[in-house]
Image (cartoon, rainbow, N blue to C red):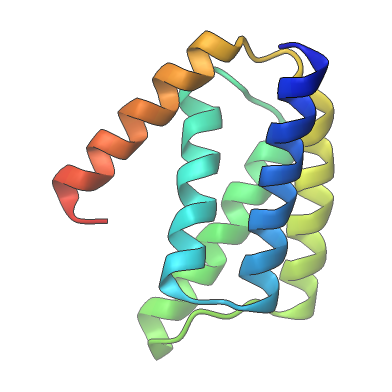
Length: 114
């Protein structure tokens, strides 16, 4: 991944996380989930991605219990730390694989209504 593409994707990822933290909603949750799913599908793995996904699962579990999307302070901190770790690995993801993964996730979400 070239530097320009890496910077753009890193900024988009960080801004998506910050939007979820500042204005939690089903839409901001879904946007973050889609980005993480695309990274997984593109072949990224590691502790930071696992941490981000686990944090998102905690948020989802709470939503299913109380019907409201929200992050605790500890979850917001964990998500920010995870995104920083993911940022460090973004350059290793081939841009063509990421593009294919984004398309596959979008198609899947469209078929299930997400």
